Length: 113
Length: 117
Image 1: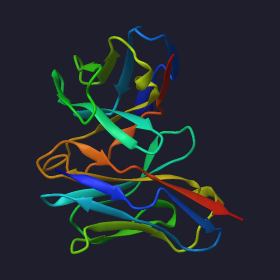
Image 2 (image 1 turned 90 degrees about the vertical axis):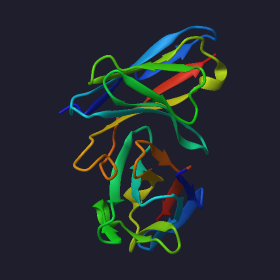
Image 3 (image 1 turned 90 degrees about the horizontal axis):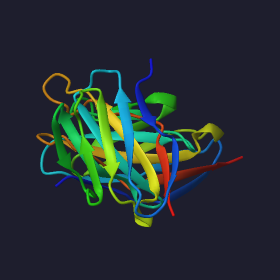
């Protein structure tokens, strides 16, 4: 069965420093992987997705993620954090042959001035 | 362009009361989902539907029922609300896409905050 583990419940960075949010997945088949962002009291917005094309995926707002099959990872990075990046981030997996979209428990990103 | 609309946005229920949450999407999507979001637990799938007239159980279906009588609407019902169902509920929809729904993006509503007292 497909599942996602987000390794950090909270990540704190200073504005202008790099961001790394970690996600590991479990899937029996070739998965699609997604990162979503949720700002306070809002719905979820797609940042980027991996669907078996290029392993390095670029998303909105300067975020990118790299699919590493050997490590079953899909970590989210950004070279330089901005105050507006403070939000909760969710990694999700969808598996071939299954219609479900399964989410991790989320990582709250805190950005300090 | 409304996208995914959830009603109501807020609701307070007494234990034992019933209610229905409505999700409507105007993107002609085949797949629709209901999730609940609780602190530290992420989004957990309650029920989902792959087309009009079809529904399936997710991870946490107990205490909930759903119906998809029309393609654009997905209803979530609580027959007898319990305090454990206090949560934020999100509806999402996605298209099947070419070759299946694997890589298509899910679009989310703004959520319904439900409190059961």
